[in-house]
Image 1 (cartoon, helix red, strand yellow):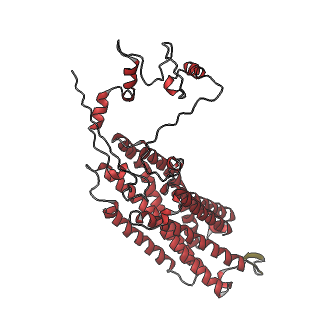
Image 2 (cartoon, helix red, strand yellow):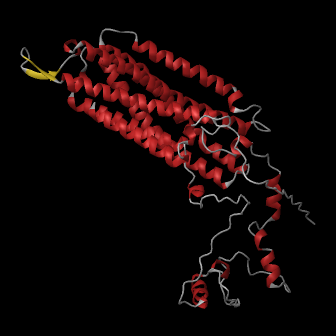
Image 3 (cartoon, helix red, strand yellow):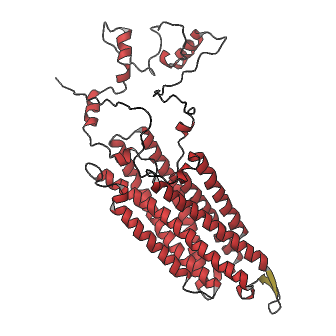
Length: 422
């Protein structure tokens, strides 16, 4: 149990560290706009804290009672609970209630995540987007019912036996591991459906930031699903074997230790990945300078590194000529180096095939629109259905509310291209 306690403490410290770097623990503060995210963060933090308390209470009891010598068998064994003091038996029983609460909170997080993805996938397939928000949808009501049902099953399992402490733990772990296996299988189904969801989101014109988040979730969820299956099956095998008369696996030191270590490490890895996925840090915004008192809107522009001292600008253009890179990728300086006809254009923005009489200025003016060579493709893309806002502004399964708009008013201009074929 000392290994379990150390792993649980590491997971709790990682949760505290990650939420601090995420938004300085503001995700734990309840407010009008982000109350659901704060509630889910408290549930996740409460789950890890309860598992931590359960592990350390068991460590205290086991190390206090320790081992005894059994004369009839002439060997040293772990002291059975019948020989424990009344206080240690009560502590062990209370620790099982902490385990029940921690496991119930963990099931709530996994259920909410799975059902929220079902809500998003349905929003994509619904013409015109979702009819209701997440908090008013049928998926949210199903989540409430299933979560309460899981909690009731766990509480009922721990009360099947109230005097035999070993059987209390066995029944709790059987019911909890079965529920975890079902949720892990649901996560496998999500992994199979997610690629088609990604293709639909791309086809409907999602921003690169949303697509990047979805790809990140898909990769992390595949690894996390393997970990969830590993710890659920390992705990299920040990708990079912404890119900048998022979207890073959639990009495085998090799298989017991293997399944125990696999279950603990897989649970730790799955929990840490859940924290990273459900509270994803935005490294782009974190790399920006802190906000100043001036709230004037400043658009983000790419940074062009100045030319180093002691080097001629022409040397960089010669390097670009060797690498077949156009001058627009070269450092920005005050010197104007004329473009030579011999300069390569394979990686240039503007292709060399201009019409006769077209000046360089006209070619550069067309550069922002030459990313799409065929204007008809742009026109056909604009006729596709719009991406639902619930997916277009996706951040994580915890970010279910509309984003809060801050700063000065921003004007968005929408243009439409009409292609006429003659």
